[in-house]
Image (cartoon, rainbow, N blue to C red; front, side, top):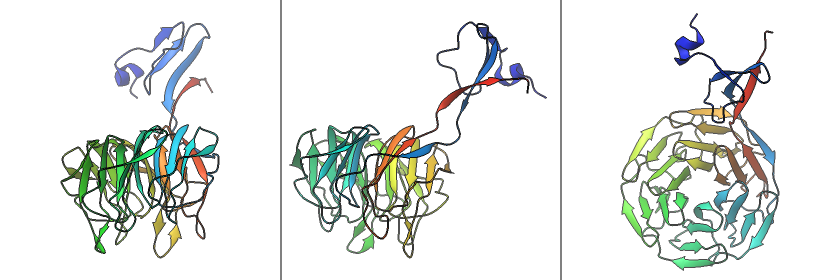
Length: 319
């Protein structure tokens, strides 16, 4: 059997206080408490019920963080915008144009709403108080996906003239520019990413897909598939650490399944409390939000708060 030194390259360190930034698998002996300790990462996270939105809706945009989120637009159509403070949603100023919409934004004071209902190419910018119309997209794409920030975003895929699209457009803060296509044309996919140079898309249709692709600012690259293909799922996170949650499988099965992407592969983790499709997300794989959507048979106001995998110090005993 290999020793700790053979595995880690060092002896178990004796310290008077626990290290401030230990790494996973590190073990030390605390001479003050006379306890052998180590650091592990909890394998699964959990969902908890958050405050309900004021307006039930599906096909909405999301932006921000787990305790400072933004929900806007949606099928109906809806123009309502709501801000989340970690406990409650508060109505703020509406979108200029009511519609189902893609969203981008890493904070709730700066967001982008674009596409996707019908023939809309409209783009609106949120400054924390108001929405302002800015330059349109080049191509209308129903049921497309988006990710990024208010000044740096991507729109991709969708339906164009009732056909699957692989088109990708890049937002630089002023204009949309058509860039390299996705490898697999699709609509109804989910996405995660924090800029127009780094993101991931996953799932979609038609037919139902499990395919995932990453974006590096220039090209799309196929990566490992979801374990369960689906359309109309929610997404949150960044290119190397993302969640896919909820969605739909034909003919009309609403999903609660959640998968986590670690930059290499997908792992099924804790399900949503309420299965939903066409929902939105915000935040990271450490702390995130899932909100709205269609819970079948109706649209939902539900918000669920994600607490993800976190480091945890454990003590060792002789038992």
